[in-house]
Length: 171
Image (cartoon, rainbow, N blue to C red; front, side, top):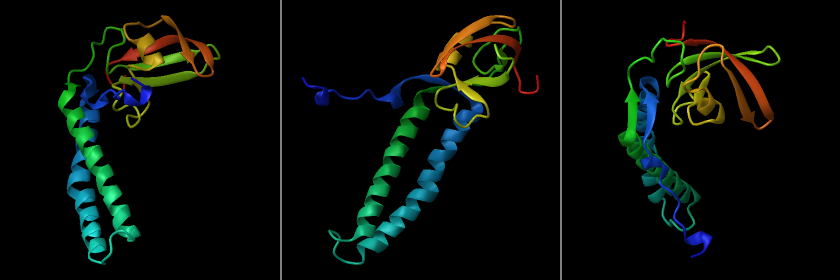
């Protein structure tokens, strides 16, 4: 069996954790695709189809591809939303880092960073979100204030000291 014959893993079916805000963001995106974007593209496709010869109709071909992309995204989001576990409770406020914690770190150079540990489906749109599955997220989970952590990053290893952990963003 060659490498082309191997089926890619279905990442949409992989279980995971997500915050309430992250889940809502994904659900809103699915709703927007289904109720706004898809109807608009379907209407444009129908108009392009009415123009005649579909084989040479660039607008028709473009809209068919656009509709296929929307449908792929919808399938992915629906599968993903079904398998995600929403973490509704705030993390313990005992100085340890858990999923959902806000963490302040100090680098060796004295730079201060503040992150929130979130799921891999949401880190991009949660302000200062960092995925629990990222190299830094994996190192931080379970650590406490004053612990030092060595993080392997693309630009090299960096030593950080955990200076604060909070269950909410104002802490």
